[in-house]
Length: 443
Image 1 (spheres, rainbow, N blue to C red):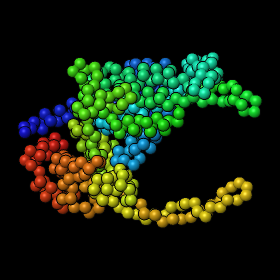
Image 2 (cartoon, rainbow, N blue to C red):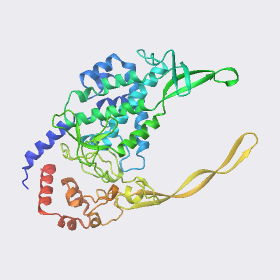
Image 3 (cartoon, rainbow, N blue to C red):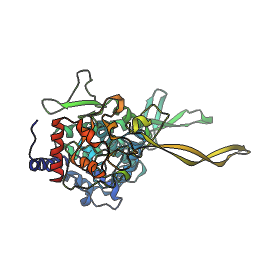
Image 4 (cartoon, rainbow, N blue to C red):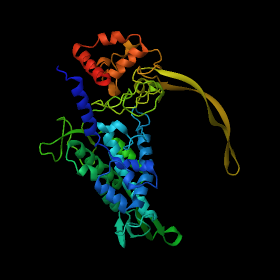
């Protein structure tokens, strides 16, 4: 394998940083600016988005305020997984380098954020918070369902208006590009919008003598956003890996045994990292990495955006993705006995209350040990990290294939016992790769 001189590698790395910087959704940054944000202060918006921002300031405020809801839902859906939808306010796209990959996690983020915009705008219209929309004007007169006829009344959520605005605003950046990532993002944005519409429900109120329900007044309302989140989580589980077709207009499944993706499916381009180890370029402030040297201008081509699982809670009894074996990637876990306040000795008192005492209970809490990138490795021998078992049981690549210059410098600085034995397991090509990374990082 031929390797380029370090100077050329540095140029290619900087170029990669510059090219991949466009792959984000800068409108997500509105949630960090609050209701007083100015359109010109949001980095990365394209002209169409900036124009809409100036024309509809109340809509932008609603979108910014609604971001907490879909981010919270994302974190709920992945609360027991290695990647837990963590965000960082230091990046204007909120998800940092995670977005550099066309992974299924990124597919979910785009889908649920697009769904969140639709849900937020439709709700704001129904509440009368916005000047240019209100209840759905098409829901007038009479109609019928399986139970019989009814009159439209109340305030039906104007989802079609919200979908239309979301499509214009959210998709504006991707529509300027026609590469694979843009097509992927557009597809997942649409899947998210369709998910909200999928769970519209007909709610009715009866009128008549003695509750006879001789007349019904009905309106259409969005279901709780949790149903949308649950649906998109299932779509994440069944996401289809795709490649762009020869015309550059759509997708084909990368594996012949995969179905062709429908408009409701989530699609992704690249396999996900295992999220076991924190990406050195991520902005997370984890105690295990507090000593890590900072090197400016370095951009790994295969940056994962992973925050790692160091310090994450895990379950020793579980056999699922939240188990200590899976969550901690085989690094082991620390046990701490903590005191929790729980309700106990509850009694029913007439009438009508249940009164309980506050009791202190000692419980064991398990947290994943830190990786060997920090001094809190828990004494795990470096040799034991030759391979890692990831989600689903697949074996991950060896440590020598992961080492970069910064990690090697850390090994040298901290004088980890066993580092030399790991390097001996690397083949010559991998060692040359490490040499290039050292030259790139430290000159």
